Structure formats: C-alpha cells, structure tokens
Image (cartoon, rainbow, N blue to C red; front, top):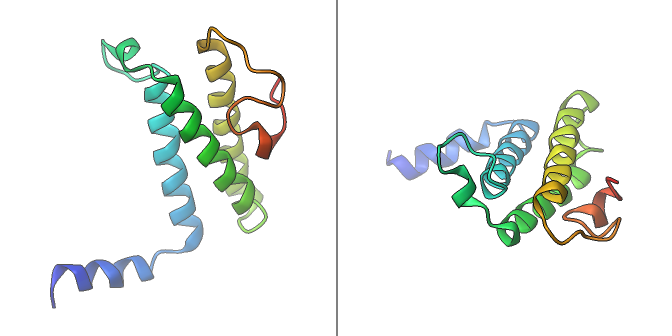
Length: 112
C-alpha cells in the first residue's frame, strides 16, 4: 500500500476532538508568532497584525462552532488561549479596535 493510502487510513482513526484541538493549537501558535510572541531573538520582526487578525478570527470561528460538540474540558483551554491572543492583539496594536470589533470578537463577544 502507498503512503497516501496509509495517511488516509490514519486520519480516519483520529477522533474529531483531537483534530479540532490540533488545528486550534496550530492556529494559536501561528497567531502568537504573528503577534511577536515567538521564542526567537527576532520575534518582534515577525509581527504582522493583519495575518494575526485572520488567524485569531479563524480560531474564534472554529472554537465557537466546536465548543458545543466537544466537552467543556476540551473547549475551556481553547477559549482561554483564544482570549489571551485577543488581548495580546489589543496590546500590540497601536490602533485600538472598538469593543466587539477586535479579531474574532464577532464570534466571542468583546474581550474588553
């Protein structure tokens, strides 16, 4: 059997909650890097608020949609991480968004 068939079979065995958590963690990590929160010496050079906004909004949509489908023990840390990123975005941005207009806040409500 070829590698592609093996990969398809492998993903079919992964529970949905694990996939949701994995995708969420990747979105969180990417957003953190785009907010300059990476662990490299030149992390500040990675700041890209436009990209961070997109990633945080996508994360908010996923977490908000998935929360009713996964247990609270899985959803709570995702919501906490999302909120931390939303607040970090507000701290990093020199032009403040109105309450409820920050990244992902159309899904989560205002974080301020």
